[in-house]
Image (cartoon, rainbow, N blue to C red):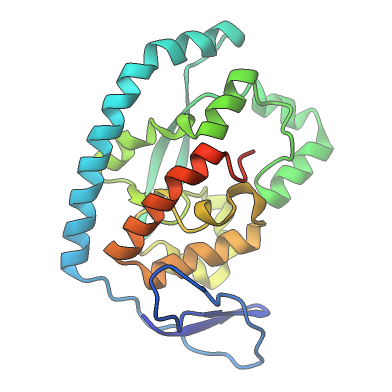
Length: 241
């Protein structure tokens, strides 16, 4: 849907004819332009949900085959829970619990509080460069995105979608400002526009902008293109941390 929106010192420009190419998402402008209400057709919602269910069932079949080996490797390196869970914000601001395979040491949160410089970097970026809390098997799980597979349960339950904005914590909404309500109009996704645009190589502001760009331009065509681009990105470990 064509339109623009100004937030802070940047303007989101959605005047693109393609569903997935040449996004002109950041342009400076002194004018405050209104944000149109995104219209998501019922046929898109039905098609997207059907795609989510089929994709989740296929992915969970693969996950169940890999799980025994992955669980043993996680426990062998670092005793603790196999799964990591955290409350995230879903569609319309509804909170839900997200699941991942644990890729960090079991006392990761305590480690962060004991290292103020790392805590500050985490609070600023939501990530740490060469995070010392990540285990060896955890590094592999993250590079391959296998740690994300349990989120297919969230997709099957209708809390997430295969494609959408990142599932964020409530504390991150501050960074989006008035765009926070916009990104909550769709379900968060397992993959999305920012993941195929550099993953961890994109900075936080760029990730916010790409998330909002997706909400304004989402379509089945875009979802399929993002899914097809996700596979080579994962296999090449592009931008993985």
